[in-house]
Structures are given as C-alpha cells and as structure tokens.
Amino acid sequence: MKNKSTPAVEAVLESLKQPNINWEKILADIIGLFDCKTGTLHFLDKKTNLLQLKTQQGIPDFLLPKLSTIPIGKGMAGIAAERKEPVEMCNLQTDDSGVARPAAKETKVEGSIAVPMMREGKLHGVFGIAKPVPYDFTEQEVSDLLKIGEAMSEPVMAH
Image 1 (cartoon, rainbow, N blue to C red):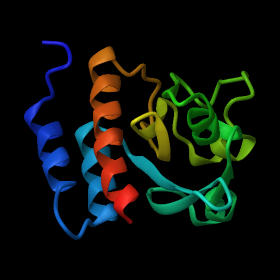
Image 2: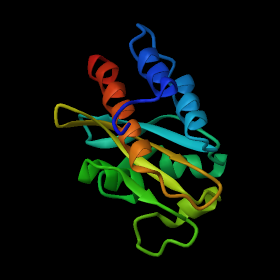
Image 3: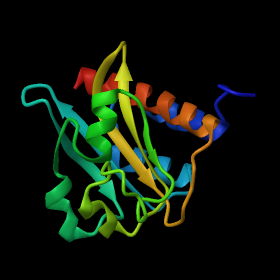
Image 4: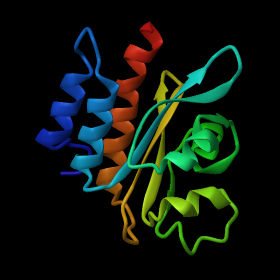
C-alpha cells in the first residue's frame, strides 16, 4: 500500500487545487490529519532567501517573533529547506543534536517533523507539524507529507 495516499490526504491535495487557498485551513487540515497539535507554514522569499511565516497554529505568542523569519540552515525548518528533505525529531524536548533551536523546546511539543515544499527540484517553503508526545513518523506518513508539500508548491509558485 506504500505510496498510495489515504482519502484524507487526497482531500487536502484537492483543496490545494482551489483558486483561492485558505492556508490556515490547509495547515489545520494537515495538523488534524496527522493527529498533531501545532504547525507552522513558511514560504520561501525568493528575494531574501529567507523562510517567512505564512500561518501557524498552536504556537505560543511569545515565540512568534523567533519564527516569523527563518534563515536557511537554522532550526528544523531551515535545515529541512537546506537539505531539501524532511527533518524529524522523535522528541524535541530531549534532542541535543543542535538541530532544534532552544526556543523550539518552549513549544512543549515532542514528536515533530519539518517538510520542505519542493517542486521540480526547487524549494518553495517548509511546513512543520508536531505532537505533544514522542513520535516517529512512519515511512507512509513522510511520503504523504512530501506529496502534500509538492502540491502546496504549485499555488506558491503561481503566487
């Protein structure tokens, strides 16, 4: 069954084909679909080469200034952008790899993943979702998230 998207994933992919995309709803749908509690969506600003926050859910207000603009290569989202592949942490609270920024621990989330929005080898942004418990995303979930990221890139490119 690998690489066959679930009906819920297909529904998100369909909603990305609408003329006016509600990015808050897309992010909320992805968070719900993967049973997460928080999420962020950053678009790549092609002029500055920085990730700019488009929308978020469940992030404490005091952290928003720290994640409104993310340099490529910094934190989970920046590293996912740099590597052009998902960056995952089973437990952000106990991670000592240096990938997660110190402020990320203040979100109180544990199992988290940052997924690049890629289309034709080009980066268009990064979205991240997280659970309040330690968690490893399955190969199928990562595959679905990458598909969603690719689908999200199309309207961003047209933007």
